[in-house]
Image (tube, rainbow, N blue to C red; front, side):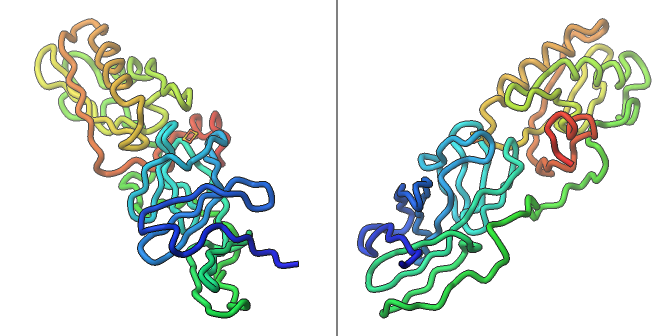
Length: 254
Ligand code: FES
């Protein structure tokens, strides 16, 4: 018996279209990207929710729940809160039918006019890398060292600011934003004015406004600070390498 499952006919999907289907009772999502068909497990590795309604940009799909992003071709998790890849499927086009089966790298579509096209999977599995391809500029734990930021020697010290920022907890990951590596810089701009450069695990992070507001409030509760400016920066992009060992332990990442 063939282990290929027909998911759609070729005239069914236009570039950018998607279709939710099942293979061996597992939900999958077939996406047409230009002239390629890519097929992934329709379950976010963050907490198993469907990915199917998430926005697609190029070969990436973003989970509409909490903003994790995955590469449709490799299944790689590209940003938090997901850290594990999702399964991809080998896809072939034969006799006007788009078919898929488990166990490939996914970034492959073979068009064949007969019923026995070559297996298009060229990789070794369903994707195990979480490399974002964008190395962090900081290789150590991301939390800035106390006192390392300029302008904090007088007045409120960087260590006190970081301690205050540790009270701000990412609601999805339940880890404070300092240990997550979201704080890029803390500095004192005036006698009672401080600034913080912070990032998010994903530009689409729905908790962003809340984290910014809570950071501002946490700092302005400190004695000697009347104004805290929180600058949201996306460069360099956050990567899991920025987390402290404590954060990794809490999230079960080794
Ligand atoms: S369920 Fe997908 S990011 Fe949380």
